[in-house]
Length: 333
Ligand SMILES: [Zn+2]
Image 1 (cartoon, protein in one colour):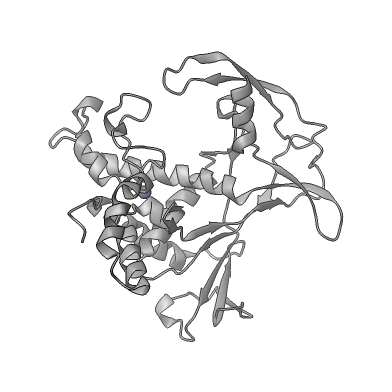
Image 2: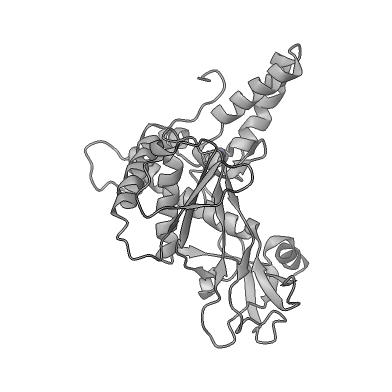
């Protein structure tokens, strides 16, 4: 019992209550870290599904699961399992084919890297380490980060955009009882029952939030795969395939979303290389950026030009997944 409560308190409080500046009105927001977690696990699912296709036995269009080549798969799956330790690949638990977390792998080789560099000057040493870390981080870690590397995708806290219908004090919240399930056996854990109070809209509509996703330091076209991967991810979000917080089995936490605006900021005055269509409007510049263009997706355009661009980036992502292999000791590029 105590354990389950601790678990809840430790990070499954999906919503946070807050007071809006200026108005004094109370509302709720979704912490960026919760949203990020949701986006990362779906991105990993996409990567694993695509990578798993490479493990198919040759000449068998509909193989049995045990016929796939799992050893090869753990070496080229394009998303590590952020919790997996060495040896987990062969454990017959719920993630039998997990690839060791890049963080856990790097923890084991970091002392050796530091030893190799301890006579170098600080500058050279940090350059060397940065190169090693990016080489040994899987695409999911490059985008979302790991212990050693800041992710490129920033996710802000998402604030409710309802002026009515949100009940921050939770008076309309209903108590739901949960039973903690043992993740390994699937059985009910001893006396691990707990309760949760999910938020509902006061008139049973959806709760709506506005979120900002920011991809920083994007190097196009080399890193177009990041945009392609995000396109896959946001399509799943649009289709309502993502779940947030507790109670997924009770049908809670279904998340749907759509893009309403895209902004591109550049450090260069010339943006011809970006190949933007006429629908993009120049905005007054933002601090640190020379030029900013925005595309309003609520407009009437069919966005054919943007669709073509996205398809190209999605193809770049497919190609990356097809060719990716994990870099490990002795085989650094
Ligand atoms: Zn990783």
